[in-house]
Amino acid sequence: MKNSSVIEGNLKFLSIGDIMQLLGSNGSSGILRIYSLYMSEPGIVYFENGNPVNASDGTLAGLDGLYALFGWTEGTFEFSEERASVEKVINRSRMGIILDSLKMLDDGDIVRLGPTPSDQEGKKEKTDESGNPRVNGPMVDYMYVVDEEDFYDGETISEEGKHGNWIWVILEGVIEILKETPKGPLSILQISNGSFVGSLSSFLVKDHTRSATARSLGNVQLGVLDSQRLSQEYAKMSADFRAMIMSIDKRMKQLSNRAVEYHTQSINIESFIKDKQKVMRQGETGKKLFRIQQGHVHIVQQEKDRYLPLVSLSKDDYFGDFPFFDMGHEPENASVLASKDLKIVSMDAGVFQQEYDNISLTFKNIIENVATCVSATTRMIQKMQK
Amino acid sequence: MAIFNLKKREIECKVVYYGPGRGGKTTNLEYIFKTFRKQITGEMVSINTEGDRTLFFDFLPMGLGKIKGCEIKVQLYTVPGQVQYSSTRKLVLRGVDGIVFVADSLEVRREKNMLSLKDLQANLKEYGLNIFKVPLVLQYNKRDLGEQGIPLMSIEQMDQDLNRQLKVPSFPGSALKGDGVGVALKECTKLTLKSLQRELKWAQ
Image 1 (spheres, one colour):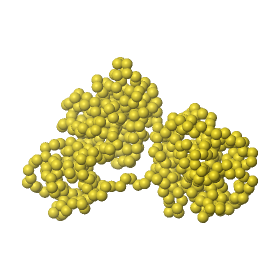
Image 2 (tube, each protein chain N blue to C red):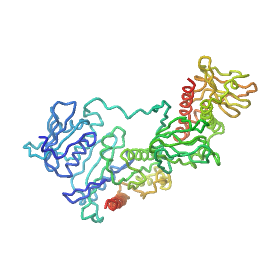
Image 3 (cartoon, rainbow over the protein chains, first blue to last red):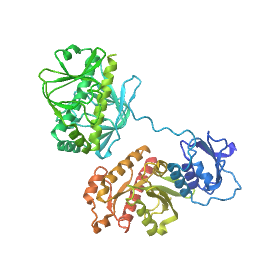
Image 4 (cartoon, rainbow over the protein chains, first blue to last red):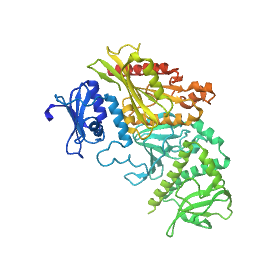
């Protein structure tokens, strides 16, 4: 039979619905055979002038057989132009059959052959070849995207130390965040789809200077966020909430600077611990959220008897148990060491939670994304010190 | 991309009605099917998908002339909005040439409209299409309900919500009464053919 085949291919590329449309608009007559690894016999559909007239999936015949064939989503097909003397038992219109079958397939009324296809590749945090973390962001809210920009492999999107007020969201692709060091550029982390490029302060502070370099790994499509809309929304938030957002942003910046210090071994760990008082112990639970009024604290991770200073916070910064995201810092995974003149106020986490619930999806995404990047960078530092 | 049927000397292009569930996509197509009976070849295929119906039929647009001596045939589809119907959506959206986005004017559906448009963008992207480039028109449906005192969004607000970035033609409409149905389809087929002709020139 093979020799009379006029078209053949893979069902992955052209599904049976597509093939039927193609044969239909071509007005072809002949036999379509479908081979699946999961069936011993091929499925058969007979066509006359582009319309299916009979079919079989090995057990069922006629229209029911044809419906069942839509469940054969893996395999190969071939169509041969040959006269077949079969009874015309299918009278429904071609498009009707296709649309109906696909509906039944999606409803689960048609059995999909083979092992259940796994969901699209993992959306969680992955690592690249060098073991550095890669952060995937949440679903993009396109309502905030005002423009799209394309970058080719290796292009610099924003450069450390240069001015820039844009904030982008990655629509597709991977971006590497780098910091300049005397020992050459240091890769802090990789971010991909849904992650944001540019910190929150970039659209709030005039003449903002970029704190890191962003470079595309492979081709990248970015969406430019509506900074006017974001800053309007930001202006409507309460002062406390704004201060908290800025404080998280500060953590991210400090953490990448700290990564450079660890990398160049220019950090004096002793200076962070000396004369400090532990106000929150790593692993403690049931802690509250605090705002600093005076003095400063260091967030320090402890591993056995080794200290790993992460960030230093001062007036108007927040520390403690943040209600709606996890940065992998205090109180579970880090201690808080305070200067002697520390003065703090306890904040009501419930009020923050309420305000958080009411902000736009994009702002939530940005905050969540910064928190994830903080936690990924923290793990990178941990790894560097091992 | 449209299909060139060399045997029949026809160009088949695909126009899809997209929008939030119960927004009036089906009513649009039913009105077209009823009103332009002479321009319709074949039957209307109607599939009951959960919460929504999927419709399909062929339509011969009038007064658009021929491209390279080929008749133009438009396949009109609605697509089920529900997430689970991904196979149907894939078949319908693959190779789509033009889109009529039917938005619901009811105030309470504001978010549904925006989500659906976002969803359209994501879906198109999956098939390698860009919402800013594909021929697209918006229809703000159910304007007639305002007369009954049901709170509607203003046209300006809907433009602000949905069309600020896209800047495509938009039409107020009432699919039930047939207002704004013909113009939206006509504008969409016009844009579709224009874009096809552009593609053809490139190919030469």
